[in-house]
Amino acid sequence: MPTSSQFEDESPNLIDGKYHFPKPPAMASMQIGTLSISSRYFLSPLAKYTNLSFRRVVRECGGLGLATCDLVNARALLAGSRKSLALVRTCEQDTPFAAQIFGGEPEYMRDAAQLLESMQGIDSIDINMGCPVDHVTNNGAGAKMMCTLKDTIKLVQTVVEAVSLPVTVKMRLGWDETDLAAPRFAREFEQVGIAAVAIHGRTRAQGFGGSVDLSGIRKVVEAVESIPVIGNGDIRSIPDAARMLKRTGCQGISIGRGALANPWIFRQLEQWERTGTYSPPGNFEERLRLLIRQYQYQAELDGPESALIAFRRTVHWYLKAMRVRPKLRDLVQHAKTEQEFYEAIHIIHTEGPLEGSRTGILPELQVPVPAGPVERW
Ligand SMILES: Cc1cc2nc3c(=O)[nH]c(=O)nc-3n(C[C@H](O)[C@H](O)[C@H](O)COP(=O)(O)O)c2cc1C
View (cartoon, protein in one colour):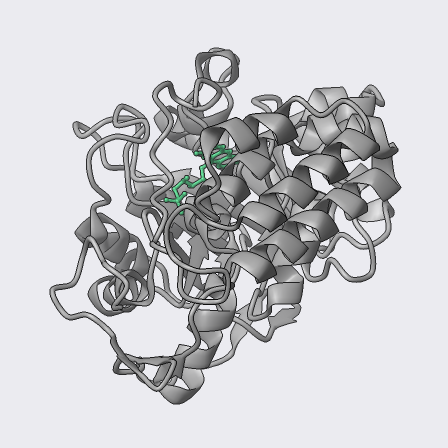
């Protein structure tokens, strides 16, 4: 069964249990400042999902380059907020790892970057310039920074000069279609020492609606001299990635929702780039094992009961991808103790998927865009 793609008419051929799809031209290895990264396929931050336990299991599936944590409020981090400190937790298996911060005040951003640099296991600092939600943009942070070129460049330069870790920026194409400022920003960022730019091919006004503008990403690629540009938005399959690379000339790709639907997508990308073939994503049994492992990693961090709460959002997508019927999904969602969780998992394992088989390829899952800008998903 070929995976569908919203971008390409061409579909991969499934022959003897492997997909075949023309591989991309060989590319130089990925270098972000002083950081050499073995894979050009990155995990995009998804607030409330891309926590340490998720990053660990996605890494174990293979092929993942840089992973970034959820956006962290620079000021709250400096104030020692437990929630913010939890977001930047990492471990030796979680590498390379970027911590993403947001804020509109250069001093707080500088100090937060220095604090992160003093912590163990953080390989780069990412500045959020893409978040569309009001409570971030109203404070001059997130995507709002794309409205104030001079101040933003000053802030970014302040952060770059304050740390020796590579500093990167994640931004959108612009605030709205009347000012697609990303190429201008990218050029200036390179001049002040930004090591790479990730670009989500939508404007802030688009939120998560409409389609990703690949020609807009291409303009960012063309605007910089040598720093890598990482293309982002709506990559769910190998053909989507092929098209992003081909149409934009970007050096790397970052994937958010596609990794929730298919944590093996980075392994597939890495196999495809090397061989022009790739294995299907994990089947029902493998997904169930991954789900349990992620819960266990979360429980090691927070204890078994708090882990259940932290895991609720992500487990929803695991179970949907596994084609578990809603009543059984609810059992997991409502588990209050570890015992209830494992009892629900046992029932799910016994029943198997509603569609497809336990060991075959499951129907592809589309993770929809959030209805509201971020939280109301
Ligand atoms: C629920 C959700 C949370 C997100 N949180 C962040 C975030 O914390 N930082 C950030 O830079 N982008 C965030 N994004 C944007 C994603 O990183 C990414 O740019 C966007 O989802 C498009 O990529 P995708 O189609 O691969 O998901 C978020 C997106 C979603 C859907």
